[in-house]
Length: 111
Image (cartoon, rainbow, N blue to C red; front, top):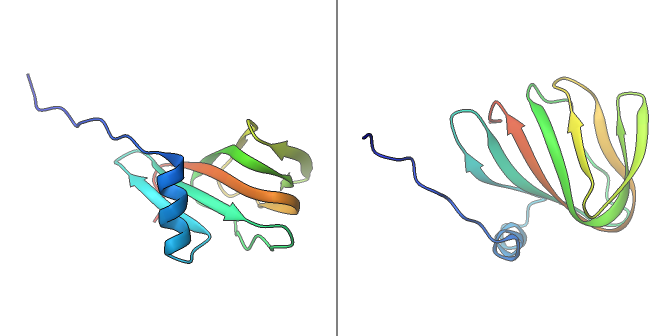
């Protein structure tokens, strides 16, 4: 039997603390061969500076409320919302009414 890759376990509270300590809106906490993942944070009134990515993305809203526009479509997102964003599609969060925390999964990995 080959050697296993090994399980990696993360706690959102720890990731949020690390992100805040690094003064960044985004903390990448996982990068593997076929995917990467990070935690993204925006507050009320913040502008989302994202440009389209070369990777497919999945957003899982951990907390907060906002509007999300993907291409020509806009939806309201809140805790528990899961949104797929195809590669190279313009998208951004806006009208953020509560501190937004979003787990982001990229495939293939970003960066």
